[in-house]
Image 1 (spheres, rainbow, N blue to C red):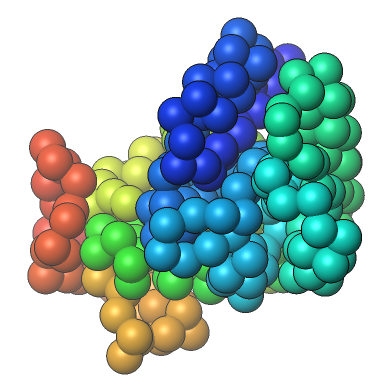
Image 2 (tube, rainbow, N blue to C red):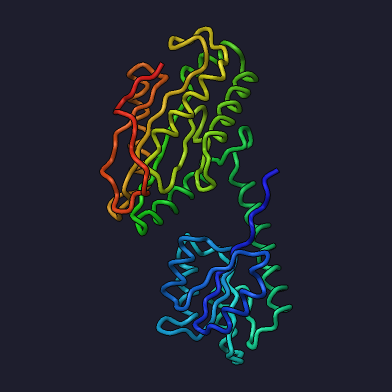
Amino acid sequence: MVEERQARILMVDDELVNIELIADIFDQDHEVLFAVNGEKALEVAMISAPDVILLDVLLPGMDGFEVCTRLKADPLTMDIPVIFITGLGDIAAEAKGLELGAMDYIAKPINPPVVRMRVRNQIELKRARDQLSRLASTDGLTGLANRRRFDEVLSMEHARHIRSGAELGLIMLDIDHFKLFNDTYGHVHGDDCLRAVADVLRESLHRTTDLAARYGGEEFTCILPDTVKAYAVAERIRKGVEDLRIPHGHSPTADHVTISLGVVDTCCTRETSPSQIVARADQELYAAKTQGRNRISYTPSVHCRTAAVGESETGPRDAAVS
């Protein structure tokens, strides 16, 4: 069973005493992040995806109301619960915060038991919502993300990578001659084959930020944020499926189930779109299939400005594999 990670709290306040108090309340069993102004708060929220944000109203420059407005307008941060913590005792200010999308409003001076209880409640509610969202976004046969979830994550990662400048990797793959497999062995064995391939994808993605999805039918896809190692992951998947040695006696490619893969890595800009990235990966997949299947087709991209240190692109274009 996977251990649930510590909840992540972002505290936004320009007063050191309040920051230290929140740290004392939560740092034993939560991961606590801090920002002392609105601009930094938006940056940390986008990168770190906290489970809850404790937001002061009176901040230098951009005030808490404007920060909340921007958080709720961004798809990357709009679902993060915001709790205003402020010395303002004005009922109108409280109403304004709630109207902007805040989930709660706590008056200073900070009462540790009250803050702990209210933060706990918001974290539990968010995790329950996230669980419902996962269930609605899961493919019933394979347990991977479904097409809807894939589209959502790719859109969010594209937006995030425009800001970060890191490379975004995408793999599209399908099972070679799967219709012939179904016709030969029946749909029950076909479903077993799909589940087995899905298991290989799960085992091949080693980072929590990676996403494997069933794109449709016998086609799957993987989103690999912040990496230039998409080719290496694709080869791990290809070999993992081949090592299953699922019999496919009538396949023109091999006597067992194999897959073909198209790989792209890209620098996301405002001139690109998620659909264009998918189209490129699909073109690579088509190239892999037309050149013999059971292989990877890959076109390296120009390195982005903040590619991960120590990572390098490997694998030639249309690299044939045994």
